[in-house]
Length: 639
Ligand SMILES: *[C@@H]1O[C@H](CO)[C@@H](O)[C@H](O)[C@H]1NC(C)=O
Ligand SMILES: *[C@@H]1O[C@H](CO)[C@@H](O)[C@H](O)[C@H]1NC(C)=O
Ligand SMILES: *[C@@H]1O[C@H](CO)[C@@H](O)[C@H](O)[C@H]1NC(C)=O
Ligand SMILES: *[C@@H]1O[C@H](CO)[C@@H](O)[C@H](O)[C@H]1NC(C)=O
Ligand SMILES: *[C@@H]1O[C@H](CO)[C@@H](O)[C@H](O)[C@H]1NC(C)=O
Ligand SMILES: *[C@@H]1O[C@H](CO)[C@@H](O)[C@H](O)[C@H]1NC(C)=O
Ligand SMILES: *[C@@H]1O[C@H](CO)[C@@H](O)[C@H](O)[C@H]1NC(C)=O
Ligand SMILES: *[C@@H]1O[C@H](CO)[C@@H](O)[C@H](O)[C@H]1NC(C)=O
Ligand SMILES: *[C@@H]1O[C@H](CO)[C@@H](O)[C@H](O)[C@H]1NC(C)=O
Image (cartoon, rainbow, N blue to C red):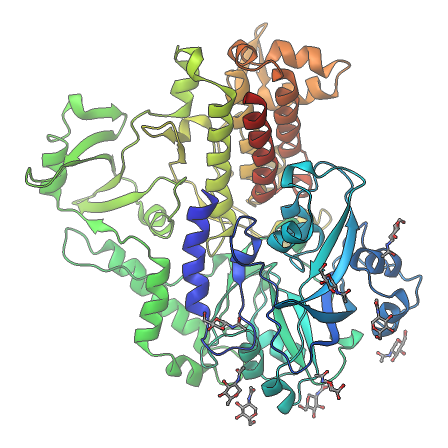
């Protein structure tokens, strides 16, 4: 599944690359732990095989002092203090950029700086060490190569070699005055032009250093992935800033650079370019939406205060823009005619009704094999939902195949999910034999992958806002997909929910809080700030449903009991093991003799998702990492 996801992104990142760069920006692919042939370090192609290089690390407790950061990165504390113009006893404010001086040298084909790290606990996977603790300055794959321990054998106390990503300038760069390369992990909101101004280097050299085409100021880049900044002098502390956004908590919000003005707070509202190949059909809806988004982008760019935005926009031909846009639009929408819809659903006959406004439709003309799809009929304006859905392309998100508008009705045509909703399955008296740990963990992983994509691999990042078992659909092979994006919307800035003092004035909020009782994050109820963490909360409830087959809101002794409250009581109680044993679905006990171990691990994961403070909850990337370990352990113990 990771593969599917990564293939998509390889396409994106390749598009952003130029054939003759100094180093190639590797984008999200670098977070891939499974890649076969690449470790995503920088190629050893510089003028010298070793050099002084610099990295930027954002101060994050416990790594927030000269001592702890130099220890983490195996750099010299004296040098670190000197470069940052502080004393060796300095403690940095959280999210302050700290410059780390490193000796960079070729090891084989690649540059690296050798750091080391003692593993603290089971939750430290290679993925988390590379992308979280080292903030993308190392890569999962290179950790795996350098260390002999298997991914699943990491235990507290082990000492790992950690190659940090650094590089030395090539002759082309030194000829133009570059002496040092600074490895800079991107933050959400970072833009090439802003960075080139802040570090006082030309945008051209910055683009060139990362293998981006030099006349495209809009390369696709992602936060928490590093780029190289070519510098003519040693970086000084005056260049570093304190980030307001707590990005360490949301390591993977992708960014599409544009040359418009920097608007950190409104970034989530920025529209993605959208163009759809429209042939003919019964509605112009999509064309209108696409064109307005298109013009919005143009308008925004042309009023930017930054030098040359107009000419730059001009230089990018409509053809280039179209290609770039098309790369986001994998799988174009089909626009159906009302006659087709009627024929497929036998004019919405009751036999074809799946549930409520959703009908089964058999499309095809007899010649070719016909396809079964689901048709949802509605009077609501679905343009926003369509707008979101057509940008999504992930195995674990329900696929919108096409649309139709006729009079005041919309018809959305989706892929057909043979096994209905997860909720029906859990409630139904499906034979318990089929509900193995393996199957349930797979479904949990499917949902996690879908959410991870939605939160972190779309631009802007989206929040589903209505995750619940009835919105998870199962296909023929019992693989899960997230459906019903009716409430989904762009993610809001996470920090807005954490600055508790001046909540009232500064944040934009949804006027009405949405969601379903039993799944709604209590913090969201009070603040109305829709960050991805509200989906993480609801996800914590769904995995409990999977494990217990109980309702999100159960009635016990005439009282309503929330699953999300009950599990915390159990896990914080005197005997979590015994209570959990009574709480889980009995079917699971027969499936595995070490069932209680797995139940505890899933319960812990759930409790972490249900944490009161949104910022303490894991990201979906972290959830995937934890679940993958559980899945692997299950497979091992089943042999
Ligand atoms: C960057 O990618 C291009 C095209 O894929 C390749 O030809 C080139 O060698 C790469 N450069 C480096 C430094 O890896
Ligand atoms: C490469 O090495 C030479 C000789 O040691 C040195 O003069 C030069 O500054 C080095 N270049 C870089 C970019 O470090
Ligand atoms: C970091 O600290 C640990 C324990 O305090 C020590 O064992 C380790 O050698 C230190 N690492 C470096 C690079 O100084
Ligand atoms: C980096 O190299 C310099 C000169 O070779 C050396 O003095 C310094 O100790 C090295 N720093 C680290 C952290 O190894
Ligand atoms: C270093 O910090 C001191 C004050 O702490 C300041 O006066 C000085 O200008 C700084 N030096 C540089 C190079 O930024
Ligand atoms: C860093 O580690 C690699 C592989 O473990 C090794 O080949 C290389 O010589 C080391 N570099 C330095 C400067 O110690
Ligand atoms: C260096 O620049 C020359 C001329 O601009 C170009 O032909 C060559 O490919 C560049 N080398 C690299 C490694 O990019
Ligand atoms: C170096 O500078 C020259 C002149 O300013 C420019 O034409 C060339 O593209 C630059 N090369 C690189 C690699 O930045
Ligand atoms: C920026 O760099 C130029 C040379 O490229 C230099 O003249 C100028 O003083 C620098 N500005 C700052 C603020 O450092």
